[in-house]
Amino acid sequence: MLNISHISKTFNPGTVNEKRAISDLSLHLNAGDFVTIIGSNGAGKSTLFNAVCGDFLTDAGSIVLNGQDITFMPAFRRAKRIGRLFQDPMRGSAPGMTIEENLALAAGSGGWLSHVTAGEKKRFRDRLALLDMGLEDRMKQPVGLLSGGQRQALTLLMSTMNPPRLLLLDEHTAALDPGTAEKVLKLTRDIVSEHKITTMMVTHNMNQALELGNRTLMMDGGNIVLDISGREREGLTVVDLLKKFRAGAGKDLDNDRILLS
Amino acid sequence: MNPSALLAVSQTALELGLICSLTVLALFLSYSMLNVCDLSTDGCFTLGAAVGAVVAASGHPLLSIPAAMLAGMASGFVTAILQTKMGIDSLLAGIIVNTGLYSINIMVMAGAPNINLNKKDTIFTMAKDLLAGTPLAGQQNTVIAAVAAALTVLFLTVFLNTRLGLAIRATGNNPDMVRSSSINPAFTTIVGLCVANAFTGLSGCLMAQSQKQAEINIGTGMVTIALASLLIGATLLGRGGIFTRAAGMVLGAFIFRFVYAVALRLDMPAFMLKLVSSVIVALAIAAPYLKQQWPTIRRRLSYRQTAARRGEN
Image (cartoon, rainbow over all chains, first blue to last red; front, side, top):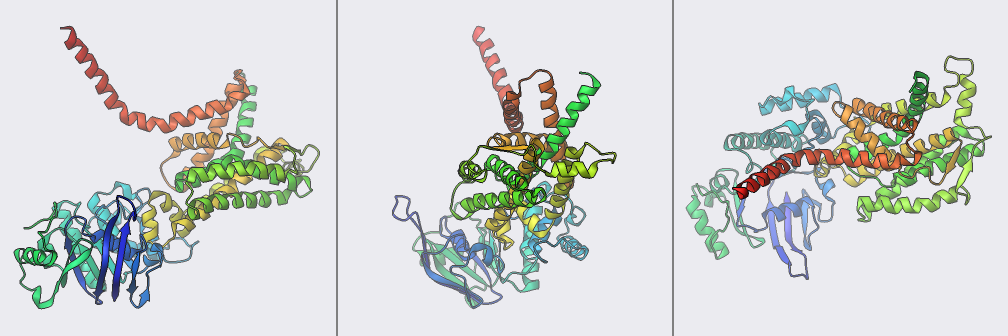
């Protein structure tokens, strides 16, 4: 499904700030995989997502999505196949435009000069109602008036309006209060399972990393140091995971935000 | 000021305001929607004036309109390419194009700094003949400017609600989101600046023909004047749909010209126009910032006073 082979990325090469963010990383995802990713500070989790989304081109290696080589494809073209949510709930929507206008852009149906049709508006309403946040009655309000949780839920809806092949979630519930985070997470699971979207999710919650999905990756120093799935993953506790990390990375997990409970 | 003088002042303000409102609407698209402060506006306005005047002088007043708009579009295209494909900062791109346009504008006017349209047919003289005998006779300048402003407002209302228009608005609001909607923000910036500058060109074209001459300095300071009008309009009608906001731009252009015309009547010298517009723009943009800073400033002052009093005791 997703085939990343031997990608590397060095930022600011040849300067004192030189940073090898990803080094010779390879990863293969099967269709329908739900992968959770944990790792230390600066392990390269977000950089990996940025590389897959095309925010920068890698220095070496190749990325193939669904049989198509996207190594040099510009970010906006990849976005047709890849959906992404950030930790910052403000990044995914345009605050000065209404909920309806945001959804219309995300839906992207019709030609350049087409207007939103009544049928589409109805579809937006129905989808918004699924969020159970009352947003379906606020379609004409600017998105800037919504709370962080509402905006993140809306972004989730927008990025799965046309179900992508691959969904990348970069700690997308970390900035929300616990109740809202729970709600957004449940929505994520529902939407992902409904459309059978292959998903990668970065989290700093160790329990969540083990509970959600079918595979867990641990990253350190720009590479994957641990990749567990299937039998090995069943019944694994947080303590086991930390032990395994030490064995794989040769040091303790070092992340100042990690949640062990 | 007596009523008849006031009427005459409003008349001039209406005519000039409506013609300049096209430039304000252009900035509404580039500045308010795309979040690009297009500093090539001055040169583009003059380009529209020069191209329009040349085409009209050669005997095709009607053709001057599409010609000026196309010229404006080309200028906007260059500005957009410089900032989206060549890595030049958007402000600098505008300044570069503006400087280059000075030479181009003289070139368009065949090496002269102005073109006189005194005894030539213009769209205004054509309209004058058309309107003769109707109740609107003699009002051709206002009528043409009003029609142009109305059509532009209408166009923008429709255009900015299409999928392309939504993408252009989102580009200034959150370019990341445009990219994640599989749209190239470079493309929306190019289209937006082309459309905006077409209106700036048209604005210059109408201005030159209504004044019966195009000259190289006709657009000088236009960007500040238009920004001042835009900010007045946004203060009065800044909320609501695109139509309301676009109509606010026209209103802002009229109010700016009206205040200026009244000030002229009250013996303010004509050369003050540009200082007045600069002050309005500076104040309007600084006001929200100062308002936000005010509590801190006040606390500092009272803190200092208390400290001074303590020092006395």
